Amino acid sequence: MTTVQGTGQSAVFVGGSGNSNAPNDRSQRWSPAGFDRTHRIVLIYLWRIPNPKSGGALIRRAASNWSVSGVATIQTGVPLTITDSRGGSIFGFASTSRAQLCPGVSYGDISTSGSVGSRVNNYFNAAAFCAVPVIGNGTGYGNSGAGIERGPDQNNIDLSITKTFKIAERHAFEFRSEFFNALNHVQYSTPGTAFGTASFGVIGSTSVTARLIQFALKYNF
Image 1: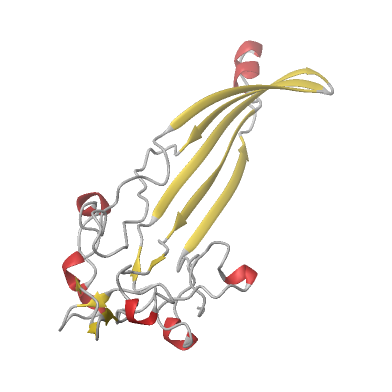
Image 2: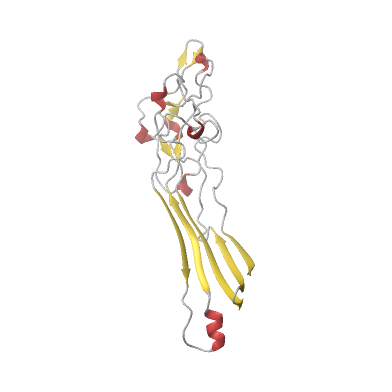
């Protein structure tokens, strides 16, 4: 949790302000940090497959010195702060304005149901937000909090299968087949969070490419 918004140059690690709504009131932007992942597990593994003890010499040689390794990353999405660039004009746009919740709408009304793939054009309930309030001849800040919604989860597995060919005591060739996003999971980027824009609530890209396979040959000596 933090009172500093953002994950870039003006964020927590360099002590930036990360203003959101009233810049003189840090307490009103207390929320999960922009890089927060509520649940995250990363598994790094290596299995050296046992060499066969029986069979012909050719079979034993072909089935020996194999290994499987990889990295599996499973994590929840990052917090999303809904903004409205038209808010805060009465204050000279001193800070980034958050969006305004419509009358009678609570945070529980923002999330939509279904798989992420079925919600790419309406990841969250865009109709839950209205124009920021008018103050005199300008606009005030919106009443929504920071980090009130979560972006899509991530589930990614990178895998490598390796065969080592011994040449001499200190010499060997290593042939690797590498699979990035091995299970070819579609992993979505965060949706647009700027109220009033065409991309608001819309996921327009993926965060990880489709399955990528490459081969490598390495000589160790």
